[in-house]
Each structure stands twice: as C-alpha cells, then as structure tokens.
Image 1 (cartoon, rainbow, N blue to C red):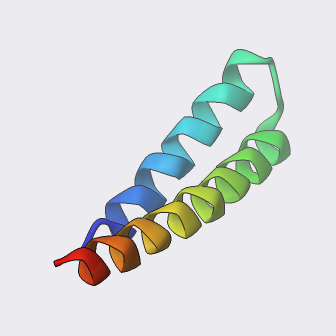
Image 2 (cartoon, rainbow, N blue to C red):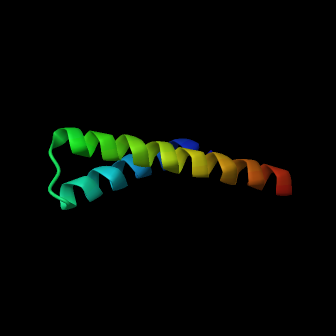
Amino acid sequence: MIFFPAILLGAAVGWWRAARRGGNRADKVQYALVHAISFAILALFATIFYHRMS
C-alpha cells in the first residue's frame, strides 16, 4: 500500500527540485510527473518484493 504515498512523495520531490533550480511552472510539472512515475515504479517493485517474501 505504499504505491499512492510514493506517487505523492515523488511529485513533491520533483516539484521541489525544479523550484530549487529556478524552473518555471511547466518545468515543475514535468519534474513532478517524472518523479511521481519513477517513485511509483519503485514502490510497485518494493510491494511485489514484499509480498513474495512474506
């Protein structure tokens, strides 16, 4: 169940990184989406790994 919090955390991290680099709104949205997708994929693999091990 870490999938949805990972998406939100990834979006927040991406938005923060783009803002820190001085990006405009489109840059922030792009970074947020890319980080959200990346965090979601990692969370999906972590969930599958956890369920396989238990």
